[in-house]
Image (cartoon, rainbow, N blue to C red):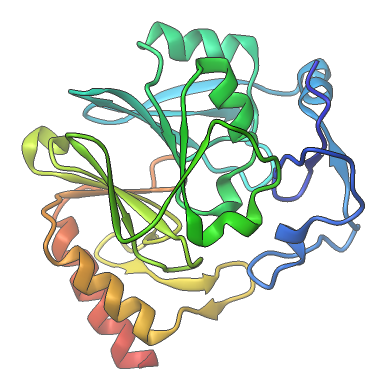
Length: 267
């Protein structure tokens, strides 16, 4: 039984019962008008509402989540890298059927998460697959359920395998991180960005925001630094946080073009 409390609004799982959700009370998220409400994984599983959703999102990239989505509703991405399968970001819902389907795909060797809004049930995932979770230390204060599986890292980059690199851009959150897979897109490179580099309806551009639901723009110096950091990486595609939120071509130039536009309007 998994009875640790989960916020219905954002999906964050906490170690013990509480009345408040710091993630929702932060200005980058919100407490729903109906107030803070709670559930747990056992209740979600017993409800019969959710079923696993596994769909290919790109070459060697499998979307992992639930139908319907829960809380914020993001989906994780299973990267089928040469070094082994790696899970990027985290979907809040997890049950035995979803674990079995991911194992059928080869399991996972580790987990990394772009920012605290997607920490959700990361400890449940780590325990199910007996793997570490890599989080940037800049967002340590937001961890709702501490666990030995969590490995904090510092600095600008971390190679979680010889073919997978985490890059701390600092957009959206201090620890806001993206994942670069140089072998993705048949060797043209892929950037897995969560909300840090946001894939938007106009696929010729991406967005940079401090708060998406509350429409607070990111600080210009942060966007400028992010663009400079990504200038040295080659990637054709950008995979965002949502099902089919993907820039399929010219990803590197899309990021640079978008940063220039952003700085023109906001800088």
